[in-house]
Length: 340
Image (cartoon, rainbow, N blue to C red):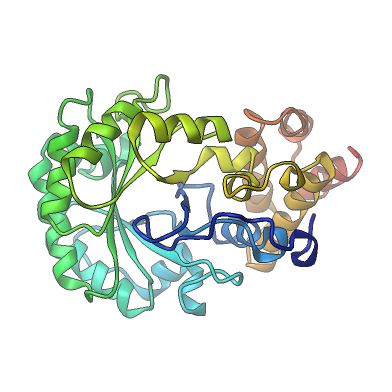
């Protein structure tokens, strides 16, 4: 893995901390059960701490009709104990998922008081268990509810703290996309991130970058594009189709974590070899254990990363096939180490 000194001045496009700031805004997407604090730590530490990532967003904090405790916030966003950033200095927004304006506002205020550099509202989660309990993408059926929750959180959070919104293009079709975007803007969202699929699509193709573009044209706030950003070509095409110049990368980062640096103008030297990827995975295992995860949980997280990364990298697919039935972390580590 390249050090800070070896990277030098590779990055040609500066890191923008907001999608409307000079430079290139590339956020690391939240993925429940995958992008935990340990994952964020190892990704933002890549290339000597110059990973190319502008902002991370935590796994969602579920907000029900009761206060969210500090312990829950810290479990989902351990970076709050360090000023709201990873050790490499990348800000981590706290994501909230809920539907009650009062309790979402209370949770937003609490997150900000704990030091969150931003609060993100999840109106895009397609999980059936979440949707059946009136959370996530369910609110897309009624854009007015997106506005109500956003407005309540915006009013409760200090003006200096961004309140951002993440959605899909709709529930079962993209027809309401403009209404959803306008609802978020009218509620006071600082910017809007759109995954270019409906809830009913889950992650099936095709991704609809054109719908993201229609939303971008309808609002004055910045719009961040998300969905199927697996390569530099995909980033370019998404930008051309949607008109967006800011992006959030999720599944693409599982198999190509170097994509953030490559997009800033760093191509060949930033590519990860098989040995580099192996080191990164072992570093993730060590970070999970250092952060208090047990061996069983660590093995599960490692398998999850390999499963998703294997969709983009053949070596990760091979590693996943080799360890997916193993029962101990020691066996999995030995298998990785033996695969050089």
